[in-house]
Length: 290
Picture 1 (cartoon, one colour):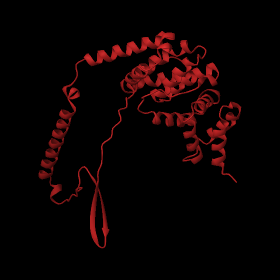
Picture 2 (picture 1 turned 45 degrees about the horizontal axis):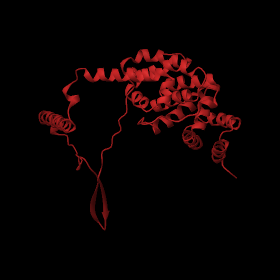
Picture 3 (picture 1 turned 90 degrees about the vertical axis):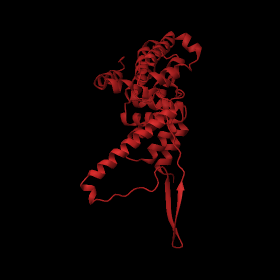
Picture 4 (picture 1 turned 135 degrees about the horizontal axis):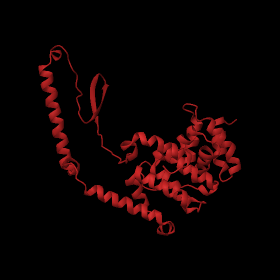
């Protein structure tokens, strides 16, 4: 006999383009959103994120038809993390929804702080599918996204199909405005530390570490507490070492560590005007231009 988790996951993946079959499944899945660490819920979220059709139907159900904030947040988080770098737009099929529902989903994804690739992916998919009133309703939303994440938005708009930009001139106008704003910021005075080469920045970083170490050392030398307190230090500063015993002998094996970084743009409006951002989110939830 199949378990409930396998049954729900199987029914979800088999439903495919049958929206009538999807509706009760999404309702059942949404009811699991508040269940902590539900295996079937997390597994189904991953399946939804891999399918533009399923993700579109889920957002339509949870953000427009029968709002379920917890389930919608979980799905947008799955997509946002998967496309954290924002290298390309997330694919969606908003034409499966009613025009009004497709538009409100775009606004509410922005209100949920979904990743730029997710929100912009839905917005562009609405334009590509010729969703009714999309050209009128989504222009203001694009301006908001551009103010919130100017760098990522500009990079993604640069990769749009020229035919789509020609059909909606405000896409090109927004792209030009973002490029002009970026050029203006680049021409503004900056601190020398922000324009250093990578090697020079590393030298400055090491110098500051030495200065901090000297300050702590002098403080410890003059501290009364440090005269009767002891401290332990890690043997390795930049490596992890595994220590194990074999036949009574102790051996150590260092593990080589490599640095890895991912550049992520922070939300500008959240940092520059957090109080005003609260009212902007409320307008986004209502489907109004912030």
